[in-house]
Length: 278
Image (cartoon, rainbow, N blue to C red; front, side):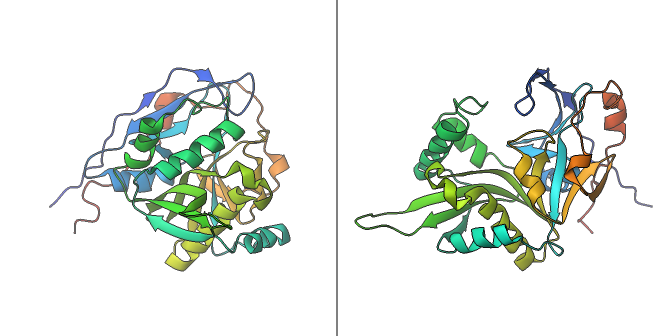
């Protein structure tokens, strides 16, 4: 008889710090290292349980008395773009998509800096230099791609002009949009929405059922756009469910809204260490 053992990573909790989404609140994260030969399976498994990747770390919000951050994903097969989203697709049909390996370039960083300076000048990433940017893009132990969107050259323009970029992870059941940024001078193009719509198209072509959007936060203007995509599911109460009416979800504080860390960790399902070997 052969026995299988689960992959058993160690989980840790960050110290509380100011929440970037809801003013006056503190955030705390449950996290584990993503490394070694089982990294891809661990990422696949924990992504289905509300975790996100940042370089070689998987994390999930675990804030005291607050459960506002909710993991969200789109059911690709059931998604139908709205009239506004169809206009966004037509408006950006001239962009050329190019998927490449996770390798940072100077033009990506230039776009990233422009995006942060105009859109998130007071955010936690505002001071990132080119070396930190390169680490964000390149330090990935799993299957990742950088998907670039370039606009055509204008009169007397040479070279390549990036309009948007997205760092994307390939999961066994979908695409996970790790981080995206775009030209802040093209606000009218709704590039953030377009990149999500294009990822839905990529997933559909690849036969993948989901596009993972990260966290949706009721009451946060930064995250409100995610609720505008239909066929949206959220991870709540330990299971994926249709979002229903976004107004039904609140960001209220409650002392019993978050389970103790030990209980959270005990309920995490881990992949089998022998999965995929037979």
